[in-house]
Image 1 (cartoon, rainbow, N blue to C red):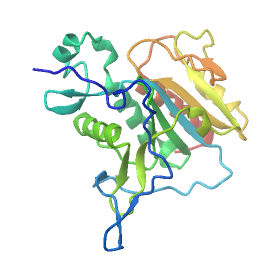
Image 2: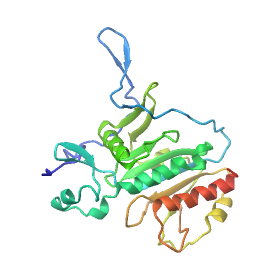
Image 3: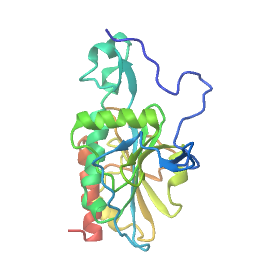
Image 4: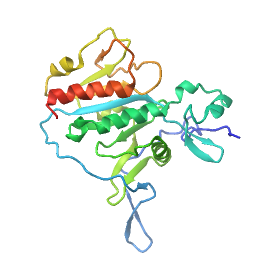
Length: 265
């Protein structure tokens, strides 16, 4: 039987936001005086392959808002809540199953990382904001698990341990960072939000083609099953189709338009 649960970080209402602080170094000193890397969060099989991008190229940043990435203790283990796998648990705790679709974030993240925009080195950063207000940073050269089950396990570890490091050199590939996301966005950037309800229906290729190349492109999308994003930092809300689109398909349209602009084959 499922037990009532409480999210980590919500034990006390006045508890400070949990995130991976930069000053929290990835080294610990043993009693014998030697240094040893913290390897508790290391995930084998996630390679480090940063791309040489140069400094004068227009870059792309993605921000996924309202992602359903919530961890709860179901029975004896902590799991990433999903409407498919935890219908009974959600009903017992009076939760709306429609709010628990982590597969949307999984597909969206994979589409971004698999894109030619990323493989060409144009992706500068990827941020994911959860429905609980936690902010995740995913390095562009991270290779995430290809199956949802393994992705789910990785997210549970990330949300509990605050970081996932690479085997070998200990680079932080995924980590929880301090809000708000705006402090990480370049000042010389165009922040574009996407909403089917926007009255500004545009052709994405023509739209990005007209943006000054001195500005980085920040694309803000919702990673939830219903509702819309309404973020103050977004400068322009647009719609790219007459029809409602999944987050992953909308991202594929965006990346394709950017690839055409940058002439990435």
